[in-house]
Length: 344
Image (cartoon, rainbow, N blue to C red):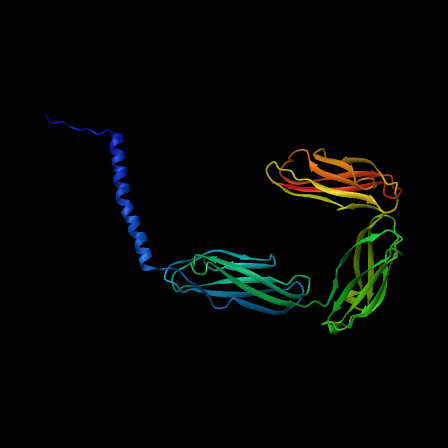
C-alpha cells in the first residue's frame, strides 16, 4: 500500500530556508578561504609624518597638507582622524582609497595667544592591519611681542606674615621695553622690577611683596605696570587669593570623587587653631541635606576631626554643597568648606 506525503505550507517554507542556508554556508566559507589564501590587505604610506610651521605670531593660522597612498592590494578605509588639541583642525580628502590611489589630510593650526614652542599630534586610524594608527606631528615657534607670566597670580597668605611672589615679563629685542611705573590697588602690596639676566629673550622679574596687613578672608587686587610702548602702555596682573588666620581646616575642601553604584565614600578633615588653647567648634551644619558629617575631638587637644559623607546617593551629575562651621575665634567665626562629588 502506497503512502503519499503532503507537506504543509509551513513545512515547505522551513525546507526552503534550510536549503538556502546549506547552499550559502559553503559560499561564505569559500569566500573567506579565498581572502586568506590571497593575503590581500591595504597599506597606508605617508610621504611625511612631521611638519614644522616655523615661526608664527600670535593668533595666526597656518595650513599644511599631509599626503598618503594606499600601497596595498585591498581597499584602504580611513576610520577616523583626530587631533590632540582644539587648536588643530583636519580635513580628509577621501575616506576609501583603492590600491595605488592617493589621498591627503589638510591640517589647520592656530597659534593662539601664548608664546613658545608648540607641538601637536594628529592620529589617523585605518584598516591597515600592520599600521592601524599613524601619528602625524606638527610644531611651531610662536613669537609674541610681549608676554606676562602669569596674568593672574594666586596667593594664600598667612595673617600678620609677610610674603613675596614674582611674575615675569618677556619681550622681543626690537621692542626696547622700559617700565616707567609700578603700583598696586592695595597698600598691602608693593612691587619692584629688575631686568632678567641670562634669558633667551629680554624681560623683567617683578617682585610683589605682601606686608601681612590684610584681614582674614579673600582678596582681589591688581598690579598695574606702565611702560614706554604705545601698544602696551598699561599691563595689568590680577592678584587673587586669601588671607588665612589661626583657624585651619586641612584640607580646606572635601572631594568625594566619582561615586558609582550605591557606594558612597567618606573623607576626613582636621580643624584646629594655632592661636589659642580655648578653641572650640560651636556649631556645624550642612548647606545640602544630603551631606552627612560626624565630629570628634582628638584627645584632650582642641583639635577636631570631621568625617564627611552623603546620606544617600544624590542624582547623577555634579554635586556640590558646603559645611558651615562656626567657631569661637573672633576673626574666623565661620568657615565654609566646599564639598564636591560626581555621581555616575
